[in-house]
Image 1 (spheres, rainbow, N blue to C red):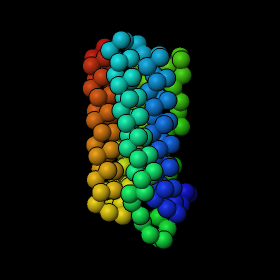
Image 2 (image 1 turned 180 degrees about the vertical axis):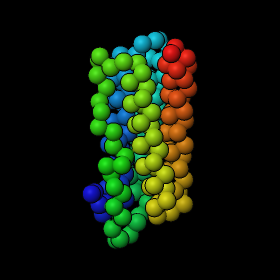
Image 3 (image 1 turned 30 degrees about the vertical axis):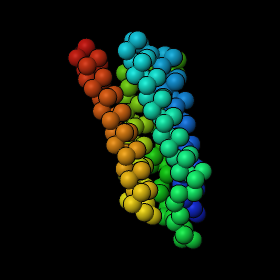
Image 4 (image 1 turned 90 degrees about the horizontal axis):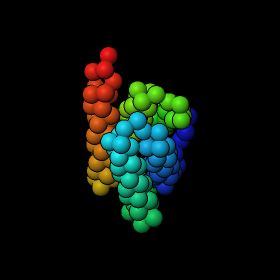
Amino acid sequence: MKQFNSIDDILDFAIGLEQDAVDFYKELAKNAVTPDMRAVFEQFAREEISHKTRLTEVKDKGLFDIGSDTVTDLQIGDYLVSIKPSPGMSYRDALVLAMKREKAAFRLYMDLSERAPGQEMKELFLSLAVEESKHKLRFELEYDEYILREN
């Protein structure tokens, strides 16, 4: 289990997850079935870049300090989705994978918000959680529209 010793450790972890999300959505965009979903995946990649930028700015400016206490174990495995997109992945599988990733990101940011050392950090993590939940909802709607209705 991963234990963080500083807010920088937490931010580095979140920044890394955001970069993984950028790469993930760029890969899905390359393999998108429809031009509309290609545009959605590209837009989500841009939004994840924005999340990464926000977190990087917080880290670079040193806006938050949690003191010398060790941060509680966040059970990092709960927030990771190990499946990678592949060129042969079906549209259905890509949507399911995207939903799982967004759910994991949502849970991470909600948990971080509960452990945040101050109100500003709490609000940052809550706003990121809301954005990730909106992404998941978009994929759920897409799944309903194009997968469930086809069957």
